[in-house]
Amino acid sequence: MRRIVRVFYRDDNGFEEEIHLGEVTTHTYTNKLKQKIFCPTENCSARISYSGGRYPHFRTWRYDQHSVNCPYYFARFPVKLGRNLTDIVRVEISYNRRQNALNDAYIQMNLSVEEREALRNSRIKPRNSVRGITSRKANVKAEQLVLFDSGLYEDELIFRRRNISKRLVDGITASDIGEIRLVMGKITSNIVDGETAEIVVENNNKVITVVFEESFTADPYNSSYLNKFWAINQVLNRERVVQFTGIGDVRKNTRSHRLELVIHAGTDFRINNRDISALAAQLALEQYRLG
Ligand SMILES: [Zn+2]
Image (cartoon, rainbow, N blue to C red):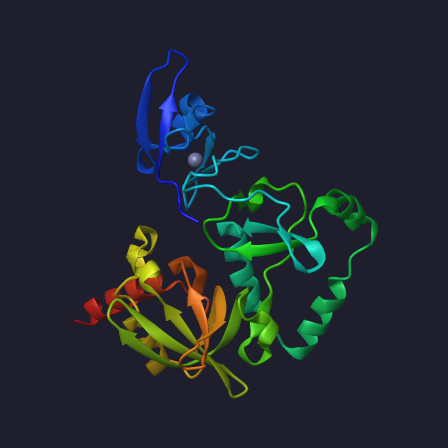
């Protein structure tokens, strides 16, 4: 689905103007635009809302629908999928939850056996805390997590979110293909290719190749990550173990048959729990000081 980058603003006097995403702040949205911005498509009356933060974006007003001919049209749930009539909702995972998941994954990877056991026991939760939430979930039988361009943003949902599934490279199975996963492992190689790279990540002799596609390079939010992948090679030269954690789409490349993790945002992966944009800046500074 396409991302909405401009909207029509219509005030109470009938004044209209087009507004670009870059012109909107949380302040102007709350004080002026809220309930007064609409889909840019002619003859589409869907209202649009705005969400600020690290990834400011427009999204379709919670219960509104685009006209069927509108390029921003999407089917509201429940979506019937032939088999078993499962109702599936596409839910976008918020930036904060992705960051928290990456932190958790790094901690998990570096726990001792005893610490892991203690954590597992502490996670057994009392039953009644879950009950209220599941009853409200009645309408939704399944959720498909997506990273971008979803009709729904998870922060808008009233029910409890399921976690992003974490997998060590050797724990990835056929059922993970086509799904969003947080993948964990050790980097064995990083081949810089233009503005990005191909990173091979391993665990127990199983590998996955982390890839960055044109959509990554073209996304303005990723501009501070381009041409920074050399930093990974420097860390590989310095440190015995370099850990990778990253959230993306797991797929099997149809030509090479290799397992791939497609990353969409620079903030969705880390090298030894470090953001590579920050890492490259630090390394460049160190080298400058050394002359
Ligand atoms: Zn529309």
